[in-house]
Image (cartoon, rainbow, N blue to C red; front, side, top):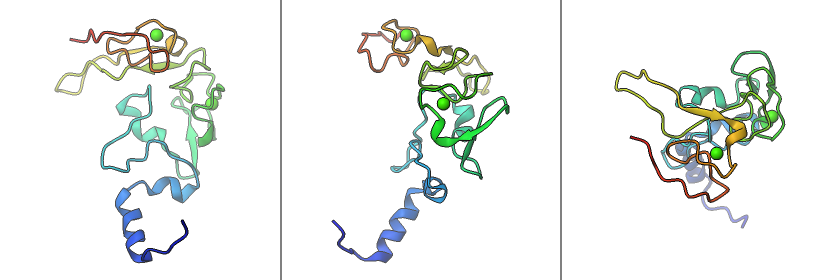
Length: 147
Ligand SMILES: [Ca+2]
Ligand SMILES: [Ca+2]
């Protein structure tokens, strides 16, 4: 597995991925796009996409600015940003956590309602998001009722 297959080409390939941020800070970035598509962290708004990347110190800043935490503490099932729950968008660890449904009511103008449910409702066997995106481990059969 350690065969050297032309170093130059490998370097170019790494560059091509565009996900160099994680490598720079030694943090694992699950949202790093490696096939040209944007992979958004589950439960966050597209609007906050940039906030859910390690900052220049390799940390995550709670969305309300109250705390700087290690980026590895995002979605670690422990609530670090108690004031807004923003470090746990995909778990129910924070009492104030918000899970933004995949389907967002957006107008062409960019304005619209952010559709979210309390993170206590994720994977609770009840379909809360109209697209069922809050149930990804329970296999609850959620019909898509978004219009
Ligand atoms: Ca956490
Ligand atoms: Ca639910």
